[in-house]
Image (cartoon, rainbow, N blue to C red; front, side, top):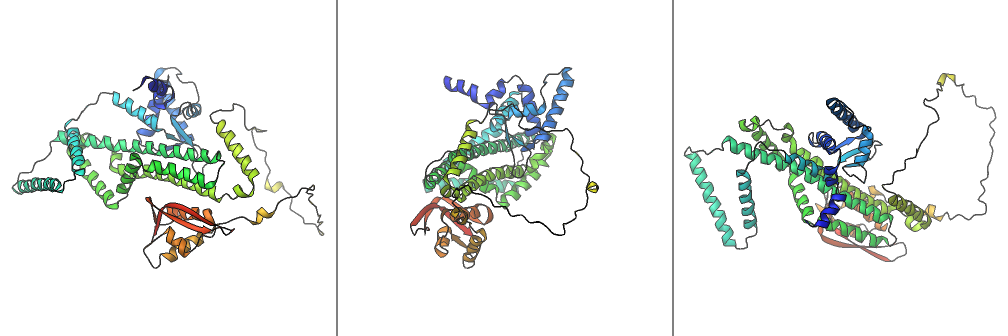
Length: 478
């Protein structure tokens, strides 16, 4: 809690700016009602603006005056600007309507405001038991002495045998209603917190995606150095405690047996009388499906990063026409420099407020001429020599051919690595073909990528020089 750090956070952190805003009460109440309460991930611009209009109307009716005079869309654009950062505005692929997602920092501020209220029930026993359970897991999981671990397992076995004997004798110990309600409320709070954690993880991967795009736009070196820097950033995030914890959580959640077990447990708990008295949120019964949906958003973010790398490798204009690539980079760099500066001038104008009508029945039928007149026009090049060789040197990677190579290799075995596949079917088109293999491993084929192991592939380029590339271990499965 350094003073200078707190001063900087008060000026730059979106959560602090939201709490200090003049309209904080209106903003927080609307965002909570639109995103947190219904557990809504993303909302289209028209739908969100309509909800904000209704929200402002009710506030004006209650106060008897106009408290917030701006239009709903103006408020949304302001909240999604870089100066605020309370909403994330983006365009989904194939959709020309803007969508909004709640920022992770905004969710933290809303959760803090929610915890300011006096809670009707504060459970301490269940949290104390959780502390004991976690301490036992840490001690047992880090014990190196086999005899100590065996002794602990025997103690648990004795406790289980004693409990079985007590139940067999008719002594069944049940939780009282208070204990049931206390543990249920703690479970519900933890389950909702997991959705907030997904937004934080997704924000980290989006930040990495933005850094990769900026890195590519401003890069002036070789492709190999760029790929090494990008893969180093990806490995750095994947190897952090947060990355390893997310990967372990996702693997556990993707287990069908775990999903069935969680569904049956939620059904059994929500049918208990003490739990029904709390009138729990019905969405808790499908909270694990919300986890899956939130996790898929994070996985799609990682897939977009891989797609960005593949497009970069496929861009043969890097070698064929440096002037065009330089112009594109200059445009991207200027766009990054102007990010956040909004031009207030009109970017489009229309001549009339209504279209002119052209009825089909008003048109005359086409009458082809008896003898058509064909004119020949010669395009003058003004003496400029044009290099046309680049038009015939384009490289196209046949994705179906690579998929066929993988399927033929899997006809005689259950799995095959990318290195073994490259030895059976030598690489013909260099890095572009390798990038296509990576795309198949992440999207179209059953494959696993082990970042802890690597393998080196080599091939001959068009000049006969031997090239090498070191990649994580990629295994395709049948």
